[in-house]
Amino acid sequence: MALRNHSAITEFILLGLSADPHVQALLFVLFLVIYLLTVMGNLTMLLVIRTDSHLHTPMYFFLSHLSFLDLCYSSVTVPKLLENLLSQKKTISVGGCLAQVFFVFVTGGTEGCLLSVMAYDRYVAICHSLHYGQIMNSQLCNSLVCGSWGLSFLDALINILQAMSLDFCENQSIPHYSCELPSLFPLSCSDVSTSFTVLLCSSVVHGLGTCLLIIFSYVLIASTILSISSSSGRGKAFSTCSSHLTAILLFYGSGFLRYLMPTSGSPLELIMSVQYGVVTPLVNPLIYSLRNNEVKAALRRTFRKYLQYR
Image 1 (tube, helix red, strand yellow):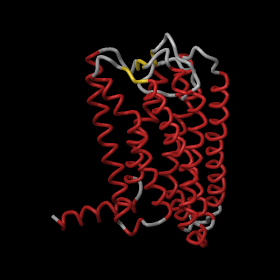
Image 2 (cartoon, helix red, strand yellow):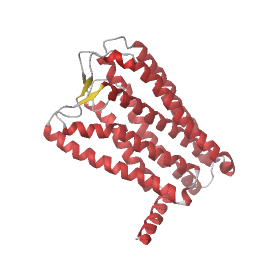
Image 3 (spheres, helix red, strand yellow):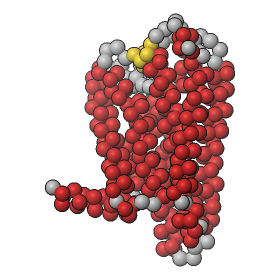
Image 4 (cartoon, one colour):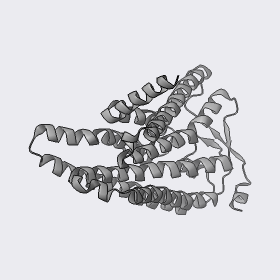
């Protein structure tokens, strides 16, 4: 019903990362390789966590969902980017654009929630280690994951319903490689104040809310680690958090920089978008495998099993 308001135009033009055909060909190869590595890396993490009984713990349960999210997050935007890099007509339908906005909200929002859930998991593991198994039971873990998906879906639904009420006319060009809600506001010929307010409020509640939960968890974690008398004990406790902290900095750092910038299609804005939308889903499996001895050991066991079956 709401889509009838978009009768003025039926599609947008995604200006992408470059207008030079030679650069586009190079970018296609680059992003195709990145996407294939992202898919393989995250599928490998899912397979290893699923099949190795040593990784059937709350931390790796959350990590498997993070890998699934990274797979989905990358798949929302990168395939369309690859298509447009090879196409002369770099367009996306209004409905397709709004669908992309919705799924970016869902996957990105869920990832933010899940990172805060993983921070809480590290807090319980370090600050209440004797009761970790009792606190982080399967019922709580499932509830936290379902709550992350539910909150993000609600946030996405609220924002997309407001976006569907906008009228788009005349200017069809989006100075970006994908559809993001801030990029649509300048294209609307109707009042965007309500949509902008809803986006701002939801971003503050969702983004800053999850960020504050992470900060609060790590303040308590740092306090506990500093109270450990032995340096080896402090190092071991910190090492369990290092991979998660790296993932947080990559996701929140580039995400906040992107959305604090005015929508202009500047090179820095595009770089930040590529960072959290394309690069982060690629490097998360590497962060959690290369910097985690348990995952490296599980990968070796899985590889040995594969060779035995052959």
